[in-house]
Image 1 (cartoon, protein in one colour):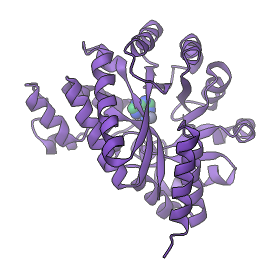
Image 2 (cartoon, rainbow, N blue to C red; image 1 turned 90 degrees about the horizontal axis):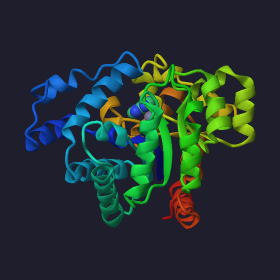
Image 3 (cartoon, rainbow, N blue to C red; image 1 turned 30 degrees about the vertical axis):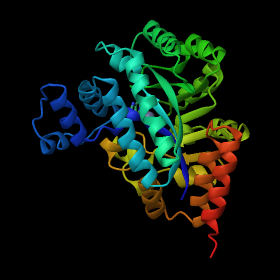
Image 4 (cartoon, rainbow, N blue to C red; image 1 turned 90 degrees about the vertical axis):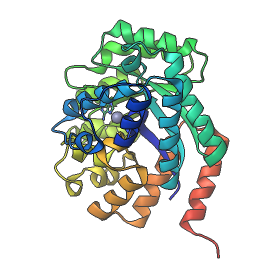
Length: 328
Ligand code: ADE
Ligand code: ZN
């Protein structure tokens, strides 16, 4: 099934094998000496327990070539699962805090994405994220530095530890990003309350909500999201692994579809959660008993909710139609 992936943290695609390989080539010592020891730590109790390991493992990314290689490897796996367009989150503050400039980070990701387009026909864009648990001024600097690289940036997002870090305080950064022509999205309603989703919409003016699963607790919010056709980039396997829900069978994805919400299925941090975009779609289908029509709707939503240029969306629509009724 052709898909657009709209919620994917590129640093969350660092597989244990790549971490060990990059640590070796960058002469860095890892606390976990082998891949099995590293993999044994991939058990999480909540978002923060995951973020601790996610930021720790990023230390193995040092050079532009590292970022390019990580991105290329993601693209190969994603393309093998039907991803035809990907809008990837990058966390530049997590790297500038360890002395790696935005030009190295974004340049490497852009190199990997350019290769993916040339060799795999996978189109893409970069969404830089503000880390909501870091000082606001640091987020503002990140935006300025990202824009100053001259590397094309598609949009801005908001991620990292959600509870206790409401979106509204980042309004000036999002206003500046919008002024610079960037699309605006934000993580909200993953662990945080529905009030954070309202704030992301009304104060930040975002075009999509990342996760948003807790919207179902607020009927007026659901009505608003439906009325404005706001896309929600849902990540079912992530929600299970970070204990937002107990099992995939309990996941609200189907209830969200039934409520008329514009939902898409995505992988979030696939190396950590054990499922790329196609895996998320297939496992959700199986666990929730989604119909073929619902699976097609999720794929179509991903294309419509993307920030791809209209001509690219038209190509992807044609690919979807072809997949729905193959000739011959
Ligand atoms: N950074 C990487 N993955 C994230 C997630 N699921 N929520 C918030 N921040 C993140
Ligand atoms: Zn995320």
